[in-house]
Length: 110
Image 1 (cartoon, one colour):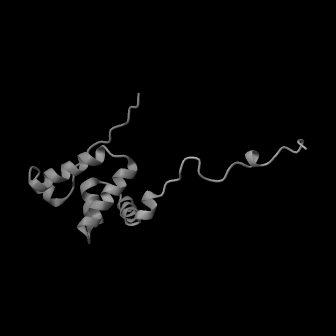
Image 2 (cartoon, helix red, strand yellow):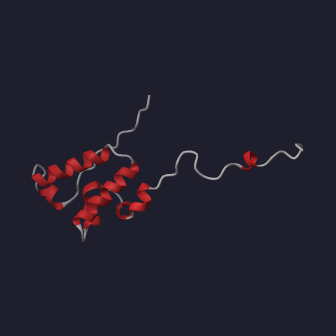
Image 3 (spheres, helix red, strand yellow):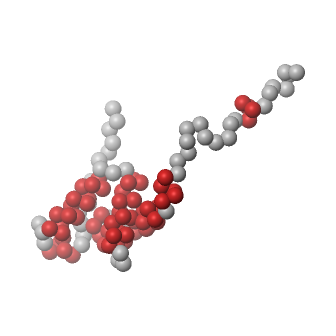
C-alpha cells in the first residue's frame, strides 16, 4: 500500500480573497491550491514557477500569497522551467561508465 500524505489546502491570503471569499478570483485561487495539494514537491515548485512567470512583475509575491509556498521555492521553480535542457535530461538505464571490477582481469589469471 502506497499511502501518500495529503497536503493540507492553503487558505489564500490575498486582499481579494479576504474581501470577497466567494468571488470568482477566490474560486480560482482555491482551485490552484487543490491542484498543488495533489502534486509532488517538484511539481508544486514548477507549477508555482509557471504561475509566477505568467503574472510577470510581482508574480512571485502574488503566488506566495495564493499558495503559501516560499518565495525562494517559487523562484527556483521559475528558473527550472526557463531551462528546458535540464527538464529533459535524464540518464538512460545502464548509462555511465562500467565498474572497474568488470573491466579488469583478475591478477591471478595468466
